[in-house]
Length: 293
Image (tube, rainbow, N blue to C red; front, side, top):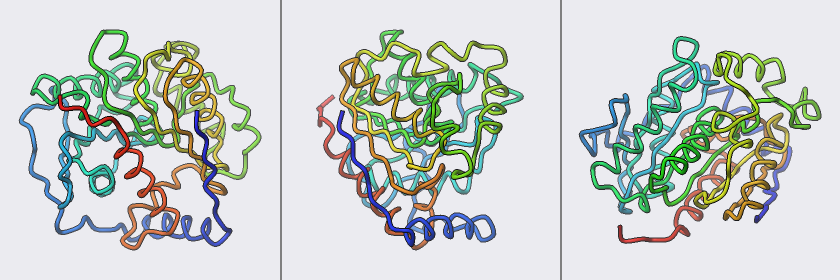
């Protein structure tokens, strides 16, 4: 496992928080050069939005799974995040609009993500040219989907990027209490999220709790978290376990950053930390094996 501690000054942390707060009152606009034309006709029966940045010329697709505690969605913001991911990975982005809790509880959202991925394979997109990307609850769904796909014998994607994943739904990571008061979420929020999502499913088993699944044979992973996150150890413990299981894992910890700090990439004029994150995604995605299908 390769661990990188990304430094930040107090000014950097303040800039990120200021950007996120500003977006709550004045949401940024999607770039006028974003192409929203569907790239493929099928998405596995799941609602999805396509977003392509102008210079996204790499062969393949990035599948983006949004956060929101499994129960919230913000389509305008998700389109902008898809645009940023398209810029960073050089690929068109398929943003999956999975069914939300509490109306749709586990495993409905997970099944939707798996179905969307399989729809790409069915339309002859090579698995080796697909990247999965998710944030927060979406990151959890990405890791859970990898476990389902592996167990079922599906070809796995070239790699997966997960930002601030919740990987242990037993809520036993030490950082949940150690970072209490430093983050924008806390144990009570996490308990609500898992209760709404699991609907009685066990929190100590995979794939719903990715840390407790069989982590052998996963594709290359980029795991990102902020040092002030209550979910820091969820990210760290999963990265360590996946690495111990033989996987290629990069763990990037952004110093002084809370949960959802990555949302600052949505700003019209992203902060230095946001630009660092986008550059890192570009570097990592460019280092994945360039298979020819």
